Amino acid sequence: MFRRILVANRGEIALRVIRTCREMGIEPVAVFSDVDRKALHTRMAYNAVSLGGALPRESYLDMDKVIAAAKSTGCEAIHPGYGFLSENAEFAERVTKEGLVWIGPPPAAIRGMGDKITSRRNMKRANVPVVPGLTDPVADADAALAAAEKIGYPIMLKAAAGGGGKGMRIVRSKNDMASAFRTASGEALSSFRDGSMYMERYLDEPRHIEIQVLFDKHGNGVHFGERECSIQRRHQKLIEEAPSVVITPELRKKMGEIALAAGRAVGYENAGTVEFLYSKGDVFFLEMNTRLQVEHPVTEMVYGVDLVREQLRIAYGEKLGYEQSSIQPRGWAFEVRINAEDPFNNFVPSIGTISNLRAPGGAWVRLDAALYRGMEVSLNYDPMLAKLIVWGPDRMSAIARMRRALQELNVGGVRTGAPAALRVLEDERFQRGEFDTHFLSTLDLSKPSEGEDLIVAAAAAIHRHLLARRKALGTHAASRNAWQARSRARHTQYPPHRPEVAHAKEPQP
Image (cartoon, rainbow, N blue to C red; front, side, top):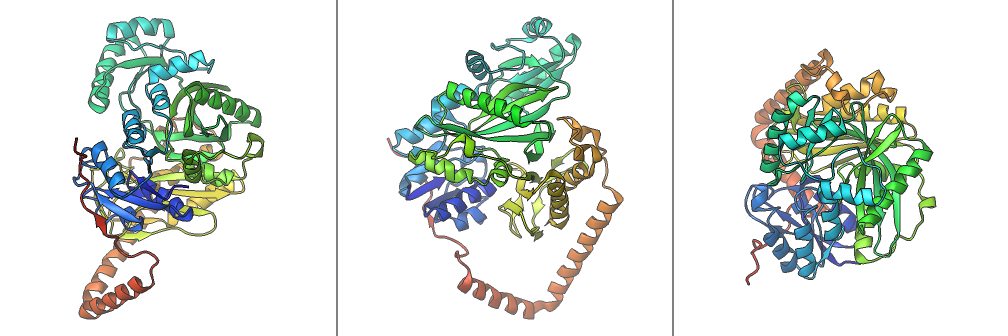
């Protein structure tokens, strides 16, 4: 197994990989920007390398700096996490050319699935069902109008080179095409430096279902069932669950076989996710994410697997060592993304300093987070602060556990989307499994409920009281805190801060 690897990411996913590395006896090395100098992932790693800068392009997206950090610390491999460089085929190629192991799929597979048009062509050749649409990009609104007449309205315009809800527009009639095409193409150009668009029929009441797959380097592949990701806003997921209430064992088997066929069609290796749209009993290939997904913990809870451990084993060259027949789901799991945003103000980002933090506990409750008091939440990075995951023997018990855990969670200093998740979980339609990707828009999130107002007011009053009490204690409190800090330093497993390597430098030609 690897002796030392670089984790080329930040936040909760960096911590997630670091923890599995430590359990496996692997030395994890972290990288950090100027903003993340005090972040938890830098303190829990074996070592940490400064990339400098504050913005992603100056740090986590700088390929030269990341590779230099890996080589200067004697790392054998790089784990990209998700986001940033995780689906960048050029970076994967550079990693391997530098003699390092890329913990992910081959660059050719990333390219084959990263571009939506190319992936549609690949899937059609592999007889994978796709949503009716085009396999070639459209150049302008006039070409889009002509194609829409053949496909049929409503139409979904999508950026060919990216995802995450950027460059997407629904077109319900020909009168809306010109404006929608101009806006979507401009957004795609700004986000991905590529304004090319493709079109497919828009399904009015779809459910977003995805299948987790693993392929080793020896031709073996398995899937770990489905995740339901239909609770989303602006194509950004809020709540995920496994399994799905609408997927029967027979359909799960069929979707798993389609997902494995999709992976084999591009020579896939390592972990990946094949996404589908489900509508009225039919399933259509949507895209493949060539990385670990944010929502992977619900699969881990239901199937009892550590997907990061499997990624590392596969990258090292080990065989899977198990067959599809041995993989069986058990119980139900939910994940709620805790984003720094205001659900009662159209989910606009919320910034500030984490002033208080209370993590939920109890049986089968997991919080993947990199939060700490005093942490600055800015607009430099993705707004996701944490992921709250729970398991239960059945769906209703898992819902009850998640509701209780969300009520325990307290992140002071910024607003989060947790109240919106509670609204969803408390809705009888959701509890009956009657929802699709538009469900969140049916809820009234214009203002907090009376109960939520009381909770917010009570939390604010308690916080003011504690601040006043801390100030009143004065010198005595400062002395006591200093003694506690010394005590923690003696007894903690990891030191409060690891020595850092010199700033990563670009390799000289």
